[in-house]
View (cartoon, rainbow, N blue to C red):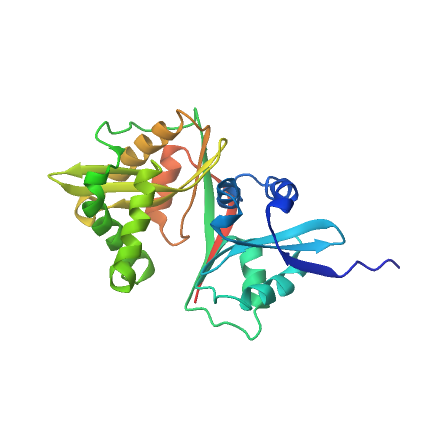
Length: 274
């Protein structure tokens, strides 16, 4: 009976770019964040790969935020060990099976502060968009930065239970500024107040990932989110044929908004917070 070779885990670098791209391109929507980060180069994060002989079978991009793609679940323990030797992850997010395998492989076990499982991953193709986009939604500018920082922090507190401005306000400001400078941030203002906002967390020529979809509480249940996100997707579709996003299973209202816009289920994500 044949036995499989021992898995070898190593840090990845430019010499592995071709193998890495071939691996994560197998599931272009599920892995859009990894594919987007790879486009930025290996300086953008710490990449760890598991090899069986010379074949790259699984990969993790991580530091405080960890994003795994582990189709070979036997690679989870050695990848978890490699990650634990560096900074301690604060969050693992991505493909559900990969996330849960990595989380369960940490030794000693790492208690989760919160587990969000499942999180439907949804996609919308160009031509399938339903709904009328608002003409008031536009790309954010530097002049919007202060208002955007406040709105995004409110969303973060609501979603994550943590105030990013209390933890590291300068880092939060730089994060929002970088999204503006990448042209990855959209905003809808009324009387200088943010009614709606959304950003991208990943961009590739064939698919983007939308994040941070937020409507201020006083403007909810008025069709703002649907018109706002329709405008964002319309803008994206000028360059890219597909939008994706993932959503908490319990957020039924958001899922209905996305479904009415034409988003369809594509995969399942999970998030573990420590």
